[in-house]
Image (cartoon, rainbow, N blue to C red; front, side):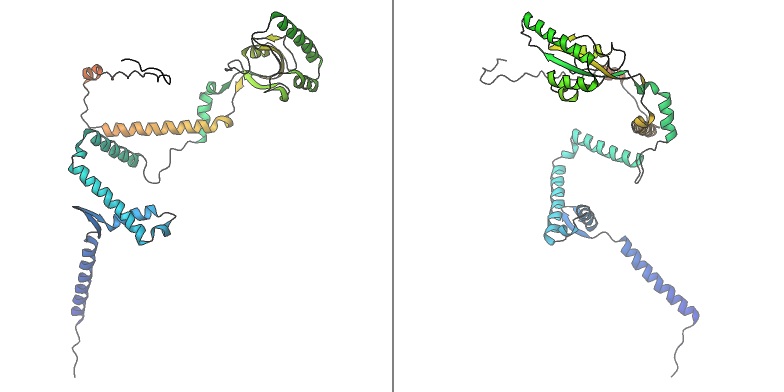
Amino acid sequence: MRYFKPSRRIRFLCLCLLLGVVGCREQRQAQSPPKEIARVGDVSISQDAFEALLNMRARGTSDRLATTAAKEALLDEMIRREAVFAKAKAAGFDQRPDIQESVKRLIAAKFQDEQTQPQGANEPSVSEQEIGQYYQQHKDKYATSAKVRGAILFLKVSPLAEAEEREQLMAKAQALLAQAKAAAPRDFAQLVQANSEDQATRYKAGDIGWVSREAKGLEPDPAVIAALFTLQKPGDIAPLVPTKKGVYIVKLTDTQAVGTRPLAEVKESIAYMLRKQKQEQQEQEFFAAMKAGLDIRINRPLLESIQPSPSPVKTPPGMPGAAPQMK
């Protein structure tokens, strides 16, 4: 029995036909619509959309969403959202000016983010040279004022005290002042602990920390700061400083001259500020590119004529039990 042996040309044609059939099948599969996992009216919820939400929710907790009940709950959430959206759209909710404005803002913001901050892009970088150059050009911003550090011994007096009581207080203060001037640093600390009525500094040798002429606040008393700046060198003690609250014995313990904060101390704040400037520059360039080629017109007379509505006058709440005010 003789067998038919196809020629080389016939075999080639058969191979081409087979490859063509496979290619057409793959193309039909690639072009096939995504599988539908649910439908709400005319809206299809695809398998891809469901899997995307499932994977986003399952980060780090995939076991929790692997059950049928969990997947049904997630799908029901998508169905509820589509149902609410369909009802809202049928009611013309999407045509409301405030809704359209919100949608416009969302789209514009999303577009701006993706255009100015591509996926994986880092914030603008700032070099050491840029930081150093800015520091040198703006050293006045980092100037430090003169500061002093002092210690106090405080004797309190009542605002209702009689003149005689005040005289007795001043006499006691004068005696303590003499002791303070003759005392060594360790002895001064003991003198403060035994006699001072300022509880915040009494057990810290009277130390009030560093202060400048521009210091604001109730503590330390401005009169104390003024007295400290009249002293010349650490260890000096000022004359008694009487105030409404009492009388102070003020001792200078250290000084710091006018200077400039070192670059290492302000480096991070400069880098942050320069990065913000670069980001703002990028935004300005982006908006300029967006407006380029558009016919933009402004009705300035109308713009200037528009005034904001006056703020409502807020009436303070009445006292409990008080009669309501007539309007």
